Image (cartoon, rainbow over the protein chains, first blue to last red):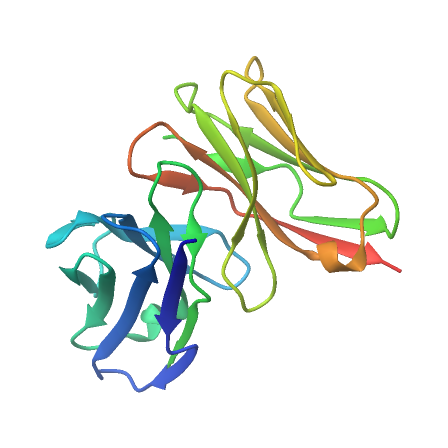
Length: 111
Length: 111
């Protein structure tokens, strides 16, 4: 079965510091991978998606970037965090065109 | 633009009663719909899905109804239990790489 590993679970970072969130998947090959952000009490906002190694599509202009160095690895990064980057970040996997499998999420607080 | 919205932001039901969570969508080209359950501090979990060639699909204690005429989707939970307390999201997909998520409905189950 497909599984997603996402870490860390929580992160507190100062404004202006860099960010790296990692997501790895198991049990599937060549999945579509996604990064979503969820503000408190809100829905999911798609940030990036990737259909293959090195292929990244950005949905909204922002202070973040994504990379997919390996088929089962998806990384969300920032060079300098802003207060507005705080939120709950979710990595998602869609391997068969059906529903998503989500990771457990990372709660990022920028202070 | 397309949007997936929910009729009620919160729903409170008595334990043992049936719950109905509603969702409206505006993209008539959407052909795949999913319901997710998100417990506090966790990533969303797939509950049930339905394709546009169906109007009803049943799972364990859950039923999804699709009314394409009025672009309406609902999730019915039978014999609601305290463990059903969570935020429920509907999502739509038009066959591409992206899924549009609704804002979510918070379900409270009263003992």
